[in-house]
Length: 86
Image (cartoon, rainbow, N blue to C red; front, side, top):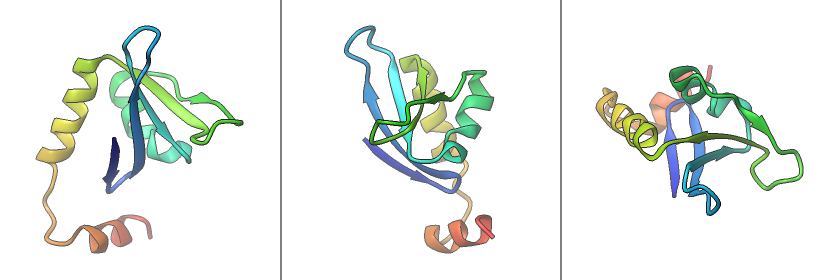
């Protein structure tokens, strides 16, 4: 799953080994809000397609997605991203 938010872009998959959710990004900044919210470490994986990642429980991931949906307060996504990235 790909998710675009005002704080960045992430790719999300399930870890086949332990069934946790892996939220991956090409930049560390996109994962900073998730890492801070759940107190998780951003893991650096420099040879991977997405060199940064955090691991979450299914419930924590669902909570984060819900919070992202509930925080929508802008009429135009691209304009909001431009404002926040200045």
